[in-house]
Length: 133
Image (cartoon, rainbow, N blue to C red; front, side, top):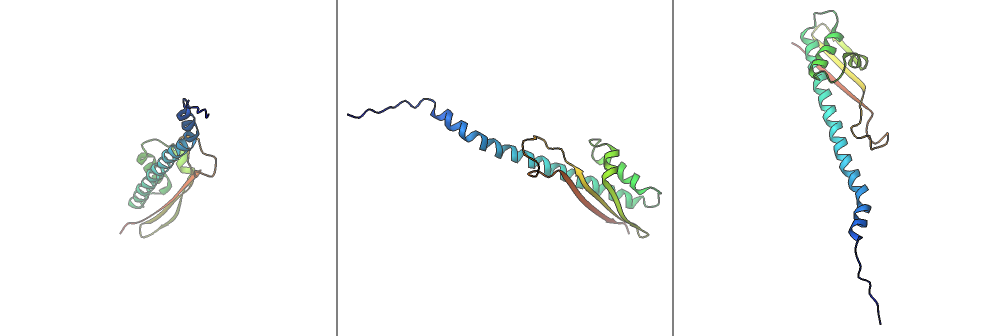
């Protein structure tokens, strides 16, 4: 005579508890990388607008100041001008109105803080070049 136990109460809760960490890792990874790429695109666009402003106003004495103001305006005040100025460099500015701006290792603050260092980049770098005829 065989005795079968048919009590399956709570099995789905245990399965869900086993799958939840993996599901949350995927979900938070999608959100975190989406936020990273949104931030990178916003910084790239702000740097391009700053480069255009520097080339357009090439007769002024302080091109870095113009670039910092243009980036701060393009980012809608999300980042302070002093922070932008410390990571921004103007490499080339020559007589034909040409400018090359570099944004090196601009600090990126993670949105979730779930992933350890190394999985998400800690800095964003970008370069923009413009020539005005």
